[in-house]
Image (cartoon, rainbow, N blue to C red; front, side, top):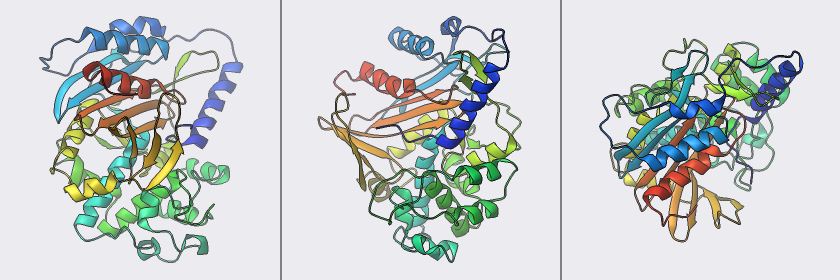
Length: 397
């Protein structure tokens, strides 16, 4: 099954733009050959962790294989940070080494935070998962009338994955206010009846973010800052947006049609669209380690809320071969069990970043992999599982 984590329409448009520009002129890219990147690696500031030559060799090989400018990893054991390191560059042109403190866009891993915010509001008695979304949005299309908050969270709303190309173009041509997103989104008809079919929907999560704003009276990102980022000490994590100056953010890259690495810089309208609840967070490997630690106990959510997120809501697709398991979805998280080993995970794809976050529930092992190369690629997903097996060889892929 194709990994459904990226904003596919935007990614396709971005790739097409690179291909067209590549056809327009000769010459070679001025960026360094990625083979030279493997020697550059950094640990967290003040780190005294022991070197792990096996992980270093593995990550550096994947960096070269995937032609990835930079990779940040974090390995967490029952809330304790075991290993954190970055490889390659935050900026190729300036030859700035990537560090674990650099922010990268995490794409659809943001959906796990949106789900956490929803569960916090459930705990506060302010949100009902089984209430119709019209309770919070007001009148909606007839095909939306039976959609509930839970349907949005588990991707069974029946809404399409992304807006159509005309809507996308309109939204990306200027910095649109949230009211315009809501107005345009609520004109999009459902594809199927709610609760009948699992179908990944970025629209659904963007709508969910708007609902969180209606309930709290503030932008969903402000609620996350108040209830999640600040309390957990995630000081480098924030919502991306068109006014960003880029300080602390690793430059994102793509491969053009000649397989050369080129920077990908989004225009303000694209940044505004991508800043919504389906994909809007920038974070670091170190901050995501703090997030993982909080999810191992009651620091962030009650046990009942965590159980609700990680209980199967829908079968996604039957996997065969190496996966050897059905893949299911809870509330904001993918779930699967292989040979009794339970995994909770989500990946993220953005125009210039790909990431993966996997948690082995019973072993207490978690791995975060963030990269600054986008469009397509499975390297982060392969790496997170490969690194986990270095610590727990018995773990399945």
